[in-house]
Image 1 (cartoon, one colour):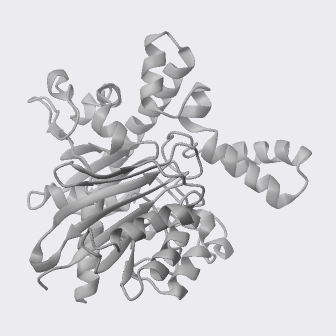
Image 2: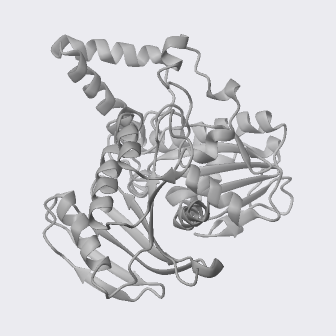
Length: 398
């Protein structure tokens, strides 16, 4: 095929990000990218820029709803001013137990994904809405769901099985893992010199870590939902189940309706905890670092908790891999927060992990380990949109 423009859609709670790649004839060239930001606020922005960074669209339209926001994107891409997409790839956080393979989207597939909204309540409702709108506003164009859980399908049952009664396992309760498109993109970038024993830490407002052997995931920190695993911006990470029962009982005293009480508990563990909950200040690492400079003890504790937790996971995965060849940091914090990388690695010398302070004083792609380090430590930005394009092309060819 000589030309195959592929549109990649990544929707969030108040934004819709998109990019278009030329993927025909073996090419993988990003033509342009854009976003609609500030949906539902008075600070709406709609922008598109080309591969060189030149702004092609820069507007501040009213964005009262997702419907208005996505129609702006569709109208722009259908206007003739940009290459009309020949295929669309949707970043899909989770499809539930019945959808573990990337595949073409149909109304039935959307219904199946929607039925497991509780697995990713902050992401799935928005993604489902965008899928339905994409089928309507781009008639005849094939749409594909590319799953964050797909990369983790190789995790053995001993790691995916939850220690709970079988009746709940049969309902789909298991470790799914997330950020899989990011992890897959790191493996892709390391080929053909992919290390046998690899740990990747995707650190951002959502944080997770994965153990990868010969390019295949053998374990990951996030579990049934993205709330599990590592403490992150506003999520607890793994926590004693008794804590949840205790909080639920306190909520139930003033909220007798079971569904409403469960929703309040979900708000506590997903939106009021993590860095924001411990610091009582912010879920943004940049804010916390500034507060630490001013002597804020709660901000210091939140960041220490974050780094301590990640170091513990790295240690456990070194044991699971029976050694380690390379540690990779990625994600917003992993790529940009030099202090977090230093603090995470400070106590890992016994595992052969030693950073070079000068090399670590960098943002973006770099090798930051010392010459004496037995483990190579790198910073590699993810290429999630490119991975989605690759899957779309593969599925269309099939």
